[in-house]
Amino acid sequence: MGSAPRQRRTRLLPKSSPEKNLLLDRARQMRSNPTDAERRLWSLLRSRRLDGLRWRRQEIIDDRYIADFICFEHRLIVEADGGQHSESPHDAERDAYLTAQGFRILRFWNNDILANSDGVVASILDAIDSPGAQTRADPTPQPLSRKGRGAFEGAHNG
Image (cartoon, rainbow, N blue to C red):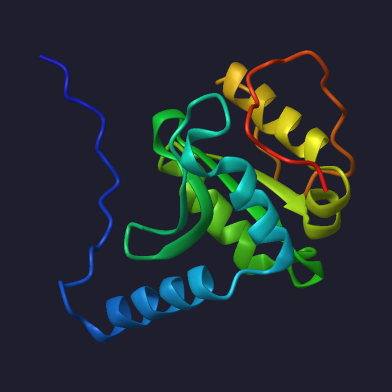
């Protein structure tokens, strides 16, 4: 009889610990005060507008991290990053942890989300279509435009 590989266990915080309350407060604050890029990206993802997928925003994962946007069905996290994320050791540690938990992470610079929403959507759809695709540790430089997909409905450019 072979033994199953050991699952990495994470320490979940008690139901109302100070750390968990801080995370919950931070997530609520981030939902209430999104950046322009987060607001734009949420308008593209919400209400199953993107390929009928359900997305959540500012979601706490394993009582450790807050993901900007997450689609649990595809274990895909999408992050909207400002300049403060450039070469961030915290982001590298966070991405390594989340990747080890089976998530894929796409990062986009805020200005790409605002100036090239169609390309960002195309990159997200490509990641969904390619479940084995490598995740990006750094924000994508300039997503390519994708025409004729037909899966993205109800969004407005601008």
